[in-house]
Amino acid sequence: MALFLLERTSPLPPTESWRRLTDWPRHATVVPLTRVTVATPPPTRLGTVFVARSGVGPVAFDDPMEVVVWQPPEGGTSGRCRLAKRGTFVTGWAEIEVHPSDDGGSRVVWREELRVRWLPGFLDRPLAWTARRMFGRAAEGLLREA
Image (tube, rainbow, N blue to C red; front, side, top):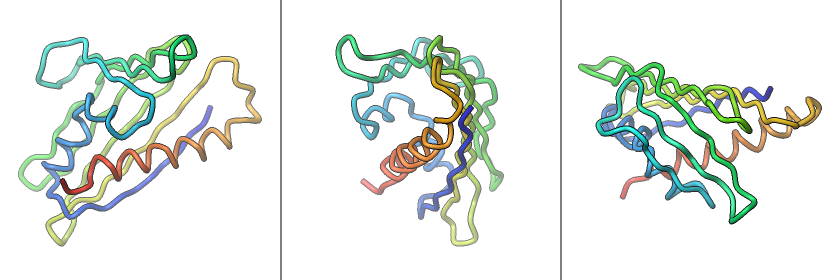
């Protein structure tokens, strides 16, 4: 099991940071070799299911996820979303929190626990390092001003 945590700040208000981070298809624009398909009708809410397909051709896998906590930021409060990873290859969970900052922007906290089938435990640390780097870049790309 690989557990990682990352934090990012953004000049965007919490509601806009939240909107960008929870726009699941938009993740495919910042994560290489990934497509995201939402299986449930919009808007995103508790019970929303989506699948991230990563890889190329036959060397690809599906990472199905379900929103199990959905608390958008409202009226100056923090927001929290928890995803359950329900795949046969990748399991675990991800949690995204968006907090208001004193300067009107936001602070993002992303926690994730990954389990990859057939991956020996001694590779958990390199997996966590790689995932933290990859998802950190994804968060930065999603939060980048257009």
